[in-house]
Image (cartoon, rainbow, N blue to C red; front, side, top):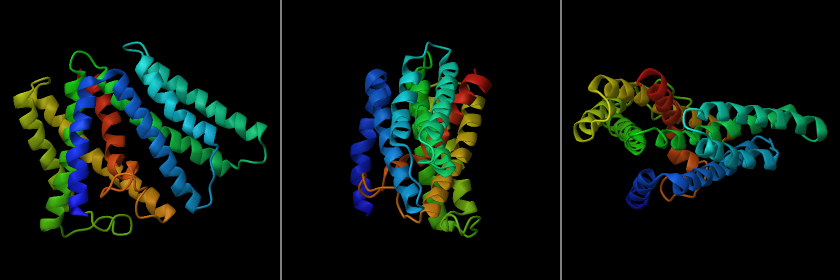
Length: 267
């Protein structure tokens, strides 16, 4: 398993960095593929608890939000994203009425939740990349912080983790590992700022600490979904890592929070 994870990472990380640097259509296509894969996986979890979703809506959102993020005019992206969420909500309510009683409220709610959780949150990768003039540097920074937190939490938790705050949800998570993840984020932030100074040190450190916190919340959120669906992994697309949601669950939280911090708190 270790070697599978390592080989997948050695192949995947350079590809991700290339996509971050390229941006544009290649990144948008990649986000659509992530959203499609994540939508498939969350429906797999839903089916374990006997919930079925309207396929057109949940897969349609995998195209809707990335395209809105990509084509929205600079500075007005969130207007378009909000409009997309309203259109998607109204579409779900129309399906509830027009196909009544085929879809229950549980199916409609699960479909809308899955669409926003996966497609809308993944689309923030595109929004960060569009930030001018340091879009690709900031997006790379978010990836690095996310990876640093995951790595730090894993190794510090394995070495000296003792206290388990969520034994029923994620028995391997520890307070010590959580602190280690945030410390790794701070270390990466200091190094990144030294090599690529796009923000001031206080802003970089603030972003690192908040990102380190929400990365772990994202991981726990996906763990909760898997516990509800009684599955170990969301999928098996990535050897040694599981599925799309297993590998990118942290990014689903870190990317939106980082984007909001950058445009609202750290302009």
